[in-house]
Amino acid sequence: MLLATSVVSVVAGMVLMGSNAPAEAMAPTEPSRVLARLITPGGGSDMVMGPRGRYAWMSGSNGSKVFALDVRDEEVGFTVNLNASQSAIAISPDGRLVYASVDDDQQVVVINARTGRAVGRISVHPDVLSLAVSPNGQELYVGSRGTESVQIVDTKTRRAVAAIHGTPSPWSILFSPDGSRAYILERSSGDLVTIDTRTRQRTGQVDVGSDPNAMDISPAGDRLYIAGADAESLRLLDTASLTVLTRLKLPFAAIDVAVSPNGDQVYLATDHRGGSIGVVDAAATSVVGTIPVGGNPLLHLVVTPDGLRVVTNDLGRFTYIVDVSGFAG
Image 1 (cartoon, rainbow, N blue to C red):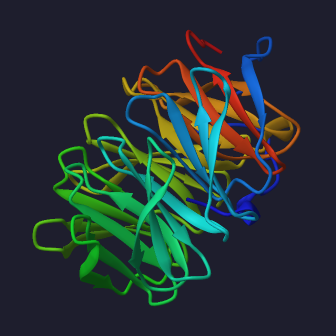
Image 2: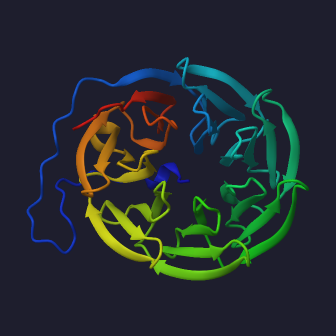
């Protein structure tokens, strides 16, 4: 998860840090791949893709609505009015429940994804920055700046059962595919913290640069990709050793990151040319091109489970459904 203030200026050129290779020019872009432009006023604080790929869910940073975006029919499917702005959003692995943090009430609202109705509320710490549901659906991790902690909530009882302290700004949280590890991206310190989900104890910590924006994990769980605002970079980490394998310097600011379901591509929400999706070859760790989207910097993006479409929103009031099938730069 990230905020609109994370957007920074474009920097030209691309090099691998530590390499003497000259900066490479961006590959030319191709005709528009935007399938739909949806009006989503007040949306934009966080986004998550449903496991079946029919709906992408987006919380509202300046409005009271949660948006259910119908990716198949290329329209706003429906909205859920929570009468307050939200920051973070997450979805259960089976796609039945959506969790949205309500900024003013120190609560996470539980939404039935089929009916769009609120079916419960969870009391949490103030100033929530991030939410993540464990792969087995049994726990919800709630990252709070207000208490510098990550609460662990039992999703059945909807009560907090534990907390991980000493996390001043838990900007983003995700789990390893097998659920054995949780990763917490600390924006203020620039650290990545690992948690053993069985013992709920810290097991590691590594510096990933100043003001990291977002992260995603490979389908196999062996690689982490971290988009950072410092010098417009993308870091590739080995999850077993927590070592930085590559730092790719980008010709744009990477605001959000999403790995394709097959692990071959890494997509970046950028401010390039007003707003473009950057496409990185995961194996070569190199930018292969950009997909122009709109006139404003992009904030979030998610990929459908079949890997054919990306949903992304901009700094204005639009959300885009983009065809990424067969993109080769």
